Length: 336
Ligand SMILES: [Fe+2]
Image (cartoon, rainbow, N blue to C red; front, side, top):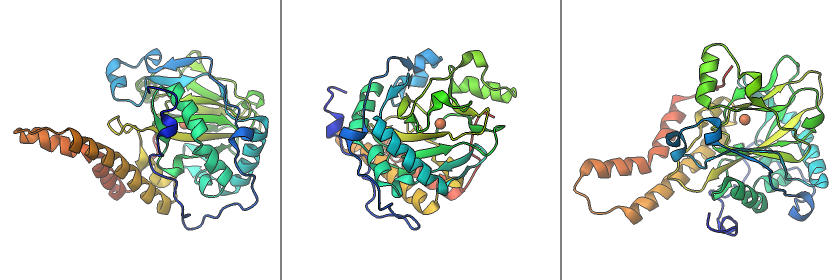
């Protein structure tokens, strides 16, 4: 990113849809999202890189950013945090499980709450995160990845969200309730790679406690996360209590970077009417960028295989989406 105004001038990768999918209606009695009143953006004090977690230069080369995770920083004002809590409580009625990974979560809330939508696509927040990640980003082109809400499970024996890495490249995790004063239920980060987490899981183990950090998050505070590369969880509660987090997704606007998504995991999670269309638009946006690059850059070349491979790579996201849609539902992956 060459200057701080660049991402403000960057249009959304895919505009938020004007029409609502079947079964969704706007809440009609909400405050209007006002960045002046509802945001109180602050800088994180510390940044951990992918290298710090043990990833190699080769692992990092095609990823959206070399940043892994930030220390907590404030996003919402007190008034913003109060509104966020009210919106999240209202959206709880739509909760459902995400396979065996999360017992109670609500997605698609940005098709019901304009306040949540406008927070999640806010250019002010987008710019703030772009500076932290050091790259130009856009709100995730798939609105199911905007404003994801996790709620406390019905039993304290179950993790709020099991050890996993995310189904999208970049996100922030926001405490909606006060996670710093909740009995258990902390947001926990494994300070290793996902390869190490997979080895531990294969041996029937979870990340060891001395390699786990749990940043204290008050209401409206977030950590910026390279969600595809950082293994994390919502820990089990120690007593039953209200516990809500909100996760909002972003992508690098550079379509030549690795896609870093596991959209096929969403087939058992999201409403299909929204999922197929959002997925198709995401793949089409990535391919359009790559095809434009190819039109602009491809030189005369007698090496057929080289040209065919470049053309194939330009539409790789489209072909993968088609194959995965047709393959149908599968288990959601996690490390437990
Ligand atoms: Fe996550």
